[in-house]
Picture 1 (cartoon, helix red, strand yellow):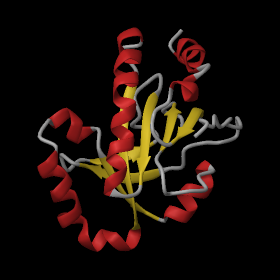
Picture 2: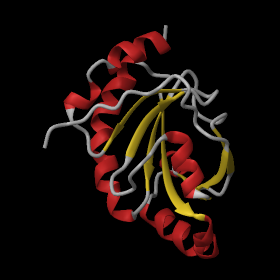
Picture 3: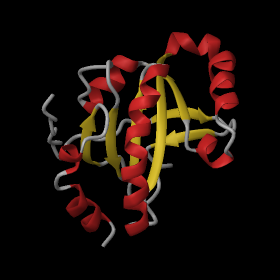
Picture 4: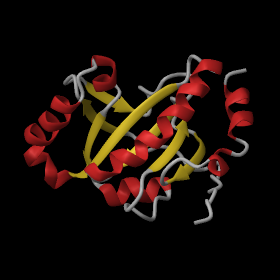
Length: 163
C-alpha cells in the first residue's frame, strides 16, 4: 500500500483537552506538550498500540538530534467510557511499568467527534501522529504505522522548530 502524506493547513490547532496520565496527574493539553514540539500519538483502540510502537525507533533517533523533542501517547475514548476509567487506566498502568512512560501516556475521555473534527481526523481505524507545539500549532501529521515515506520533509520541520 502506498504511503499517504497528509498536509496540514496552518489553521489546524490541537484543541484544549484535559486528561489524566497513568501516574494519576491531571494534564491540560496542548500547554503540557514539551517545548519546542512533541510527537503525539492518538490511538482509539488497544490494538493500535502496535502501530504506535512502529514509530518509536524513528522518534528515538530524532530525539538524538533534538533532545528537547517530546513524545506523548493519547489513548482517546468517548466520554461515556469514563465510567470504566479505573478499569481501563488500571489495565494500561499494569502493562506499563516505567514511570516516565506512564507520565507520557495521557488517557482522554472526551467528545471524540469534536476532537477529531478540530484535528481533521476522518478515521479511527488507524492512529494519527502529530507534531505539536505547546501553543497547539500542528506542524506535521501522518496516520497509520511508520513508513519512511511518511516522514519526507519532517527533518526540515524539526530543524526549524528546534532552531
